[in-house]
Image (cartoon, rainbow, N blue to C red):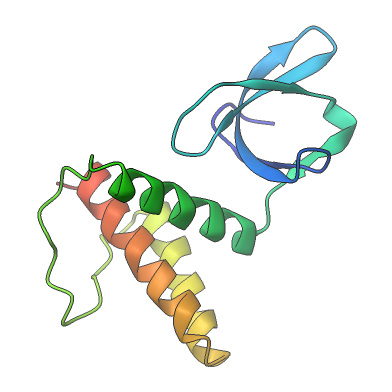
Amino acid sequence: MERGAWVYDQVAGVVGEFKGDAGPYVMLRPVGGGREWQADPADVRPATPAERLSAGVRAANDRARAGCSPQPAPDLSRPPEPVEHCVACALLVRERVEARRRFDHSAVTDANVLLRRHLWQDHR
């Protein structure tokens, strides 16, 4: 596993960010920050796109509820445009396209929220 990869801890039932090895265990950190925990490597697998999307939206919602959303309100009248040659942007756009094909409007909105957050954080 690469450091920073989002993985699913099957025992805890949550998505976490892989931070590194700690003896026979791996160290995971909650998406969006928080206290790290140890997990058995046998109980950890790569997070699915749906699990990553859900964890990212949950972290964004937690930050918004805590009142630490630093960005101004984006123009929500149009979907966000990805940056060319950015892998993260391309993955989020793919999630949005797949959700539209399934007529899953909630997942389309989630992908737009994550794409806006990514654009703000990484492409100011």
